[in-house]
Length: 252
Length: 377
Image (cartoon, rainbow over all chains, first blue to last red; front, side, top):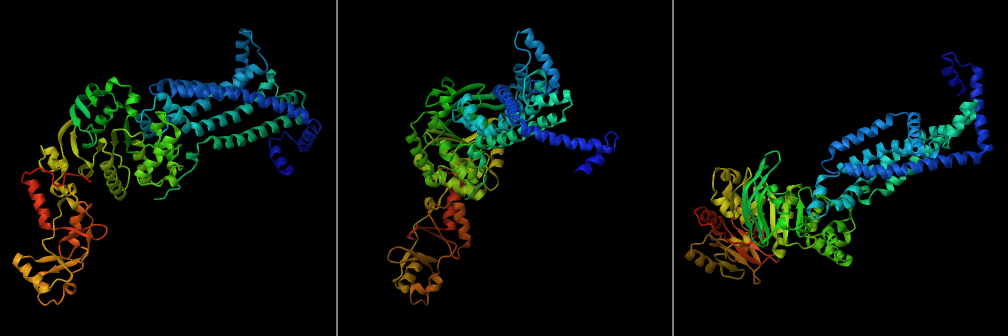
């Protein structure tokens, strides 16, 4: 690995052999940090997780409600607009969004740094995949199935609750999974405005040139994302109605 | 039972889907809405349960204006089956069948009992299928469940939109037969949409043939086949309309007593004399219990010692339920050209000959519109 790294890093002529040794040293230091302060890392991880869960729970509730609302027939125009706005939201850099939210929150005399602005920002970011997936999933339920339901005397609400939503669950869950994984990365930046979490070692490391801290933060953010992705994959499977999981065991 | 009066449907874009449509479906009648695609047949049917709102006109069910009813209540009282079946893939067969009972809040045990009863009715084993999901069923089984579901809360009226459409011809024929059998028991009032003239003739008590939103002809199938009202009907019915008329009958409707039934032990000489006297070319051989054994021809009798030795065994026989078009093609395969109709214990019931069929078709064409057998099943 050292040789490869050397070959690559030497190209720009910026990093020499000593630097590479130093880089390897940083990984060792990071490992030592992990052994020495596991409780600190755990604390950051839990903070991070907490932010993510609160933000994505709100994004899920809001997103699914919005998704359902805009999926009603005759609201296609509205749906386009909402999804467009949600995707614009994603293009705003998180630091800028935090800044904007700080301004708004302080004007409202709410806490403008720390947990609240970060959770709000992550909720906004999480909306797009959830709203879009909810909308698409509901709109793509086979019209024959909906017609059958209506023809048998189901009210629009019964069609939504008993037919459309159960059939949309897998796709909605996929959107939630996407939102969570994406937000785990963005949440790290939240530490910059004092929300805690695994961004903390990263920013501290940058400020003090402690590469080992940066490595610890980065590795754990990535691990968290991977683990949450796996968990949400399971959740997606479990929440999928059984009839949709079974495929083609037909016999006549 | 169902009465449509001057019903008009104009879509917002100005398309006149249904123009001045009036028709009455009597209680227990299976009425076919027939026509080429875009003729307004499905639209007309869907206005009955208000899935499509009509622009003007009146629709009455049992004398009650459907517009005065709550649409969901109205629909729960009308069975509904569609071409794409539309089974709920996330629900089991039982839950699918009991959709309407569930909406009507029947007790659970009654729902279960009803689901079992209906599965049996459509020829599926409740033990095997109640807990299955639609994705585990074949196309034919799904159609059956679709039919069972539309009968869920035992509605007096059924609306069926090409319910056997999305299925291979063999299974479709089977399902049609089964459905006719069921209908002969349950006697629902049915509006049945199809574009298939053969299905219409086979299934319908009445056929409403539509063209461009207008009702062109409303008659029983025999009348439609024999006296098409205009060029459109004649073309739609097809040049082979006389042959199509064969589907109107089952073997038992037109079979006749054999001109001569002889027993195994009868004296060949006496049989010969009898046939000579009556100018018969053939007779039918049965045993003591009236089991059909084979054909005896006059030509063979001359030097026969016993009837059994000159008997021509039947190449094919048929059941009384067989449709006449099928029976006739069997007759082409029969050496004698006649077809013995036997029950499932092989008792001889009657015989079909080309003469009988020619008579029937001839009668139909010479203006006698009375349907011969009358019953569909």
